[in-house]
Length: 214
Image 1 (tube, rainbow, N blue to C red):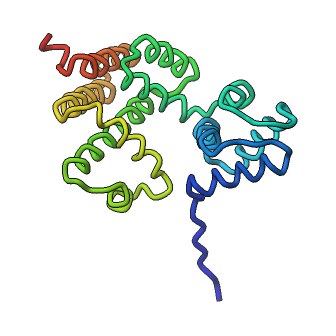
Image 2 (tube, helix red, strand yellow):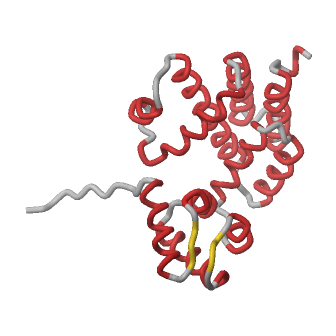
């Protein structure tokens, strides 16, 4: 007489509504785009979200909560920091990417985990590019590749992909494969492997060519 229960993770849209409502109950307001930024910043964990909202509203007391307040008061999610590493590479901020890499290594995040996170962003880009080329919409990608509760990830990719050519994505995936082989083959200093990867990926974004062909 047992029962099977499916408990799905709340989707980003539902979390945004929850954050807005929770802030209003505490006498504060937060716009939907700031609420989405807040969720990305602190994680999608419900307990973490509630705890950080309590801190935000206690600090603000009343009035609007903006992005700067979130950055000042909330504890940054490590996953978001890792995503920011990829974002800095895509935006050609080599210095910022290397500086953030230092922070993440200091926090003892494993190099292979960092590589995996960067690779995931580029895989999302490749899928977004293929969808764009095939004139397939967001809903198809979400369903075909099981993004579901992480639809915002592919939304980001579809925005970023407009700045990339097929060649750039292919060259970047090649560099990621090489770095993966080096890390798993213990053929070099792990930090050096990631630093070199960041420089190589940034060069591809900037010049549209592999650094070896410069």
